[in-house]
Length: 130
Image (cartoon, rainbow, N blue to C red):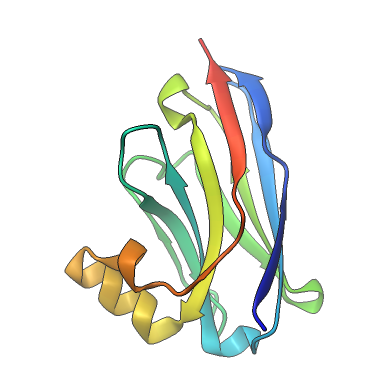
């Protein structure tokens, strides 16, 4: 059974930083891609970053590129998202999610990744005040 334990959300002022962590279990890390998605009220869930367990390759959406960094601690099956220079528009519920790498890749290419990924964490709220 694929499981996630997310932590690190909270309230921060604009310009501040937060670090989200997601401990994953129930699958072979090297065979999967693990991503962070977010969903703001009234908006669709969007992929903001992912990392491929096989080679550590990363993806960032344009909205977070240069501000957020995704990393893994394979020994602990943990995926971290360091978020710097936070903006009020980063306010959302952040979800850790995972699936086979091909599903992630194809979903990104087709623009349907949020609908392709099968395994989701419970989400953690990030609120950035202005």
